[in-house]
Structures are given as structure tokens and as C-alpha cells.
Length: 324
Image 1: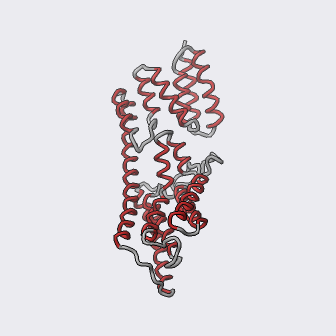
Image 2: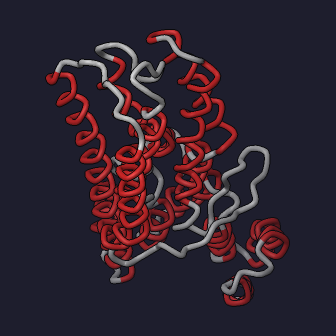
Image 3: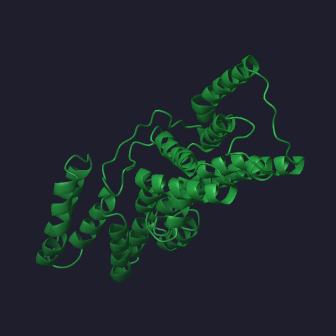
């Protein structure tokens, strides 16, 4: 998620359509004018807001698919544009187009940093995207990827305004102007805070994995609970939780955790693989093969190109053959 990039994109969109003139329907009125740019910046973050809300009820991949679905975004943008037109006036069709375009631009920018997005969900589950701008240092990467084009845009805009006739601007209360700027800063700081917390939760989950590998299963379970607090998704550590319960000999809790991981992300390789490995490791040889067989079939059918498939299938077969 480009943090600074979405803010700069929102500002550029707001400026471009605000420049329609002093009587522009977008910025007419003492309140609509100062709030125009904060509104567009907020809309530019709407896919991420929707994703965080969806994370409270579903897995990360599903939440991201819903929050960053271009079809859903276009509908949401149209509704926001119509609502804005009803409240402050102006051409509803054009306002809806601007709002929907801001959301679609957000999704397009995200596709430059992630190669596993499903932007046309639910119409298509095909994953597309690239990782051209997935820099290790995200902020500096965004400064180069999005900051430089923004500066070029601002220079072009300033030159165009100087070359044209001076246009009178409507009088607005300076307090509202500063309130609008404060809202933009608040949106940016909120996005940075969520990003920081997400990275912190990922570090906690990495620590839980390390504890599980070290055989400190009780500590691993406690760390998983901490790692799943907001803004991480509940269930993000289900695989590690299941492996820790397995280490403690609690097969029932382990199976429950593995099943939850599978049901949340049935199209992901590892939830299917670890559940198959769990079934292949418990029971008689016949029971192991019978329970793991449907999952092995899914692995062979859906993940034939995964580089870990061969290794996982060999491990499953070894576990089955170890049973009496």
C-alpha cells in the first residue's frame, strides 16, 4: 500500500478538478471548498479502510479482495459522488466519476507493489500485478516512485496558472481552510500508524514462529494471540497456533486451528498443505491416507506449479508410511 502515494494522488486529483474555476460546483460554498481536498484524499484511502474493516470478520486475502475490488470501488465511488452532489450541489455524474476514479487509481497504484492482487474480484479471482515499487525502504521508495511525479505535476500546474488569466477565488474562512489541511494530515498520520502497527504485528508473528520452532509451544501460543490483535487479521497465526498445539499433543485444538486457516484461505497453498500434513501424521495408515487424500488431490490440482509441492507430497507420504 503506497502510504504517501495515495495522499499525493488525492491532492493532485482535488487540485485538477478544483481548477475548473471559481464557480466550480465541486468547491462552491464556504464549507464545500475547504473540505473538497480532504474529501478526495480520504476517498483515495477508501480501499484500505474497507480492507481493515473486513479484516475484523474474515481472512486477510478475502478482506483484501473485497476492499481492493475495482468493481466494488466503482460502485462505492458512484454512491459517494451522488451523495456529495445531494449535499453541496453540483453535477452528480461528474462527481461520481471523480470519486470512482480516485478509488480505481488507488487500486492501480497498489498493483505496482504487489503481484498477487485480485482487482476484479468477484468477477475474476485471477491474480495480477507487479512488484516494481516494492522497495525495502517503503517511504524512500514512495518518494521516488510517487513524489517525483507529484512535483512535476505541481510545477506544470503552477506554470499553466501563471500563463492563463488571473481568476478570482471565492472567499472562504481561514479556519475552515486550516481544518481541511488538518484533516488531510490526520488521514496521512492514520495511514502511517496502521502501517506501523501492521509491521509490528508481523514481527510478533515471526517471533511466535521462532518460539514454536524452538519447542517453546506455550510461549508461541501466547505470542500468536498478541500478533493477531488489530490491525492484523484474526486467524493470521492459525497455522503457527495449530503447530504449537500439535507440539503440545493437543490434536483436537491443532485440527481446529488448521481447519480455520484452511476455511479462511482455501486458495492459498500452505493452509491446504499443513492440514494435509496434519491428517497424514495421526491415526492408522489407512486413516491417514483416507483423511489426507482429498487435500492431496487439491494440492495436485490447484498448486501444480508451486515449488514446495514436491517436498510437501513427499513429507505426507513418509508420514503415512510411518503408521502401523
